[in-house]
Every structure is written in structure tokens, then in C-alpha cells.
Figure (cartoon, rainbow, N blue to C red):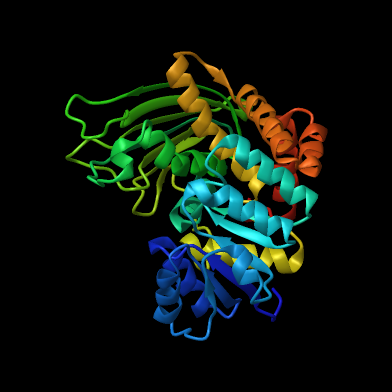
Length: 377
């Protein structure tokens, strides 16, 4: 990694934004040069809270970029604002690291992936739960068992959030399931092929939308990944990471989401501990990739395959039938192209056209990312 810190503007000064600001200020890898929030008092308070009374604040990215020079933008806005902020940053020649999801819709996410190609800038999504030393240990253990056939995650919690989650149409799948879906891709070194999903709501649920779901994914290599979860299941709750079991040809491993995974037969040794873990690991991996011109975990083309699992699961539940991931991606690409035509964004439209099949293009780019950064892919 370069000795030169990466200049960064953080956009979004809510709870998560303040966490990112604290990481950026504490680490010598970053130089915090600006904070943006539509509520400028909140931006000022966030900067002052880490002792940076000198850092400029503004209500928009465009306004802050008139005041400071930066190398990158950290997008920690609400999902509905992700597209506009990331699109504007890429167009200004800036690298972007964003809170998940890449954008509010799969079509917008595809357009941003194409924009990252057009402007030749790195766009990374912080899928922070992938950066868990125990999850990495689970992956190491199952690698000793040869071919893997089945992986399962059970997730049972009963949080009373209040607010927008209680009113969402698909609270569990859209707001939470991206974490285990992405972790399953990482652990299995596999991508989704198709899914059959059922969504439902317990009679006592306090959510307007369906707060429970079961999804069966076919993954590349013939592996099946089964997810069963509920956000309305009080008592004997799982961890926030869920409860995992992975079954291979030569053994099985289990992980309760909180403690070191166990395997039978036992696998000697532990995987190397992550230096930072969580969001901090995401941000520091991003810095390293910018400085070296390589890739890192969460690069947008690879990350979209996890987001597609969510979208496909929702569509399957709505249709009551098995859904192919590539079909979902192609439909989203068509929507993305139509939107670029409306915006007059000819360069991004041309890039999306040149992809051919969206799934094939994304997997090819993801494979290249893995080759550049095999440890983090």
C-alpha cells in the first residue's frame, strides 16, 4: 500500500456515516477532506465529533467538490440516493466505496457497473459481514472436504425496529438476506444459477410485508444453498450471522455465527486472522486496490451477483416458480439500457450493449477480480 493517504469525501453523516468517518479519521490510510449531508448541521457535527473542525462540509457532492480535491468518495447515504451519488462521483473521475446495496435496484446497479468501466474507476460495495475471521475459517475448513454438496443457513430473530422496515414489502429478503447470500457465495466459491423461494408472514408478525422466507439456490457446480429465515421468531434466536452447516464429500462443518466453526473430521490449524474485520476491512481493502490498481472483495461486478440473488428470490416468491438468475439479470440490463436512453447517457448505454449476456459478463469480470485479489474475492 502507498504511504500516501487516500483523500476521501464521506457522503452521508447518519449513524453508519459517522462510523465510516471515525474509521477514516483514525487510519493513516485515509485523509478525510470533506463531509456531505443534506442536513449540513449533521455533517458539521460528524466532522467535529472526530476533532476535525477544519474539514469543510456541504449539502451536496457537487458543492463539496468545488471546495476540495479528493481521490475517492465514500457513499454512506440511504439506498435511494446511492445511484445519483455514485454516478456523479464516477463521472468526476473518482473512485467509490459504498455502503450496500450498490443501488436501490438491480438495474441501477448494472448501470453503475457499466459507468465504472466507462470512467475506468474502481467501485466497491462494502459487504462487511463477509469480512469475518470465523467465516474465513469456515471456508478453510470445508476446503479440506473435497466437493461440497449442500450448505444451509438458518436465521431466526425477532427485532422490533419500528420505522421503515416494519412497512417494507419484503423486509427480510431485501434488508437482511443479502448478508448470508453474499457470504454463501464467498464460502462456496460459487455463483447463483437459479432459485425457488417462498415468502410468508407468521400470524403474529408485526411487519406489514412478509418477514419470513425459505429459498433454495442452485449454485455453480451443482451445490445447493438453502436459506430459511424469519424476523418474527422470538425465543432461542440465532446469531445475527445465522446458523450454518456445510456438507462436503469428506466431512461437514457447522458455525453458530458467533464462535469458531467446528468440523468433523477436525481440520488442523486456523486461517489467518483478518487485520481489521468488518467495515474497516472493506475500507482498507478498497484503499489497497486503488493504490495498486488491483481489485478487492466487493468490486461491483462481483457484488451484483449477490444482489441478484435477492432480486431473484423476491421474483420467485411473487411468481411461485423457479427463476433463473441470468434471466433476472437480462431483464435488469434491459431496464438499465432504457433508463440510460432517457438520461441521454450514451457512453453507459453503449457499454451495457457491449456486455452481451449480463450474467456472463459479470462472472467474467468477477473471475478477473478474483485473479487479481485471490485472498479477498
